[in-house]
Image 1: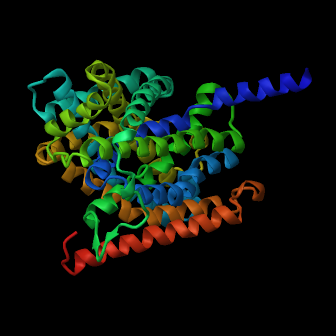
Image 2 (image 1 turned 180 degrees about the vertical axis):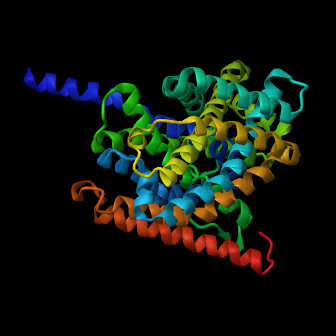
Image 3 (image 1 turned 90 degrees about the vertical axis):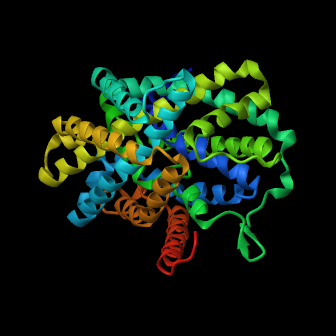
Length: 431
């Protein structure tokens, strides 16, 4: 009887802390999955499945270190950067300022295309994007962290059911002979190097977003009144992380079964791409599924938009306050200040301006954003590893030898590919 009571207490504790991992999944299963994984399947069948698996496995430690560090120390990963040295925190801030505009624009751009397609809107993309940023900002103002935490569970359940059902129905159409770990056809890559790096860059998402998991863990602690421990934080994260991996392969199967098998290609134009994406599901499951799919895909991108609109201002607000007031106690609890709202408005305005520039070719914008994330990944991955292996983290909560070896392999993997891409660009080769 006592054992059952103890077990129920453990489960109750977990459910009170459960959520940041799903928020991570919600921010990941957006552009990287709906666009990049589907394109991978359409372009190469299952040939890039090995690349996706490698990216998910080798990048895992750098994402997992964020909730681990926060649960072990009670501080955000941003404070971990500051404790390494101000140079480390400044590096993160500079990368984030640059990437925030690019990533938020890519996410809002695709979501705006979906809204335009679903509702037949005649407004310009910049106007739709501006209204979307406004709605996200108002929701965050009214609901704060709780609206993120509560909505994401229902949204991801919707998408998971419809996507897995479509993938299972399409499996008989997939040519499994294309599956493999080798990305060369003779001496040539089976896809352009630029797309290969773009796929890896956001698979499952950009490493700079690992900080968000840390901040969401602190925010969840505040909202629930329960401080998560390391084991619970890791389990919560793993559920979200490996869920994104399953979703990635589901989208690859959908792209491979419906488009690669017929020779059809996905358009670079957002309006056409949106139509093709919805049709992938209806081809597999029939017209009856279209309303469900539209709701699932649209709500997923809306949740991604919401997490992005929240994540960058939250991270920059926390980072700037750490630089200016390193010993303020409110840093420990993930509180947001007035600077959060100022940054949110500035990013929204810059996003609308960027939409005017990049609205012509959606996949080019997405590839640019994902490649930039890939190039900064080795540096941010190193900072995450250094923070979690510092004296701030009790020895029993630091990564073990196997996890450290996986981290070194991941750094080598990302570093070599980043240098390869830079080499191609410097010497004028086409990517």
